[in-house]
Image (cartoon, rainbow, N blue to C red; front, top):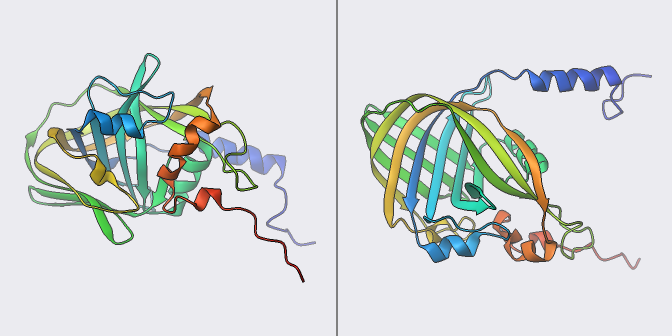
Length: 266
């Protein structure tokens, strides 16, 4: 019988796939990072328990072009500063990606709130423009000009918080208690430049980052960086406590509560 491609893989094939995953090449990205201070009550409002606000109500937007071999990727993130116990990091609200391939691992393995979208990073001489868009709306745009080089920082460990969960099969709540994931990245930067410019937030019912107003622009840079990624489950959390925030990762707030189709009466 000819090989059935949906059939079970052999042990050798599974081992080869795992080995290939451990030897990924170093991948560099070019991107804009904007950090601003917003209203404290806004940050507090978007954080599911047990996450809590940090001392300073910061928002970080990252807009990058990733040079994957033969498969360029646009990747973005809008996150707020958060803490879990004695650990401080970032809680992403939305992570637009330009290819479905980038969504699968992030959402299924780590619980990242990734969505298909449009990500643009353009430089013309000293002028830089970067944006995140979905459904035809550029809901976040950075416009600026390079004002000079910055010293390269030492390699840095960064922490993101994600909630990993699955909607219940009967359309009521979640299947099991969600888990809070600590995702750690070791970041290296090989080029860094200061930008002088601004951040524009536009109204979008699908990606309401306009609710995070720019009160003070803290940092605006253009850089080239690479990082690895590893995650661990920090704790199980209450499904009941997380449910009011689950709509954050769906365009239609009712999507995760869709019930089973009614049985046919024929």
